[in-house]
Amino acid sequence: MSQKQPYKPGEFQWEFLLPKYWKIWIAITFLMLLAILPWAIQWRLAHGLAYLCWHLLKSRRKTTLRNLEVCFPEWSPAEVETQAKQVFVDMMVGVFETLNAWYCPKWFDHRSSVEGLEHLTNAQAKGKGVLCLGTHSTLLDAGGYLCSRYFPLDVVYRPQNNPMLDMLVYRCRAPIYSHQIDHDNMRGLIRQLKQGDAIWYSPDQDFGLKQGIMAPFFGVPAATVTAHRRLMKMANAAAIPLYFYRYGDIRNPQYKVRLEAEVEGIPSEDELNDAIRVNKIIEAQLRIAPTQWMWFHRRFKTRAEGYENIYK
Image (tube, rainbow, N blue to C red; front, side, top):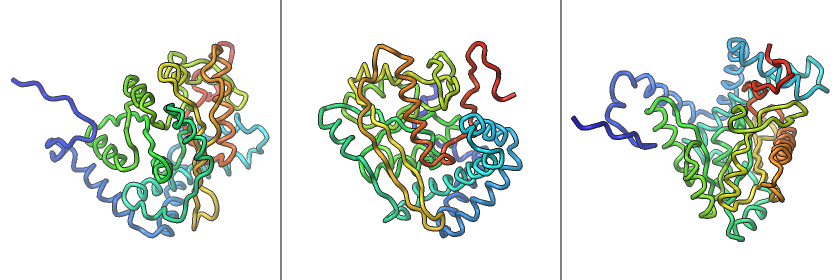
């Protein structure tokens, strides 16, 4: 018997037509229909879904509240709750923004602008690849699409567990990103950096201490990814902060892509200092639009010795 060929990202397989995948096909068709709705209806639906998620996803709600309490101690309890609810709204709005980026990208015409593009072009003119240090924004792939309007961008991604869903997401992202690089494919990352690509890389989540070091994040010790230091050393790449966010009236939103000056001196010989600097960059980005980040993830789940569990 011949062995089954390994699945290739974005590749259609006939087994996807089997009944076990029909629910996904139905869901995707429904999402495509949502993408063609007028924005006024989309954002109203987003608010309704956010309300439901706030009340149904109790664990996510609790995590969001706790993260904001810890990171913004200057906020009152009422402010924390208000901002936490807005996180859920921004997440749901981001789902519709992503659907628009996948299926109706012209919706973003005349709604976006870029700042600091010269920082990227200058680094690439020197023959360097660029790690665009960004965040897990609630804009999701809409943020990547906005960037692609101004410069070619690769993305590091985590494959979906369901192969059919992975195929669909991969294909929807294909027009947006020049390359989609599996987060475990270090060789691919280094290869594209050596070729001078710009790669969206988000070192803003807790992946434990096997891949990082404890460093303060909003003043709280947090497991901080340091893999980008090795990537930059091996590929002689530059680090440039990248941020994108929504602003203005939600009924007629505008979007800003912001690139900052190359971060000098990273990687250095001091791993902790590099981690602190990157966390400071992310903190500054998040303060621009605090609720447009995925605060419902447990950013502080890994605790340093002697520190209590934040999520008790």
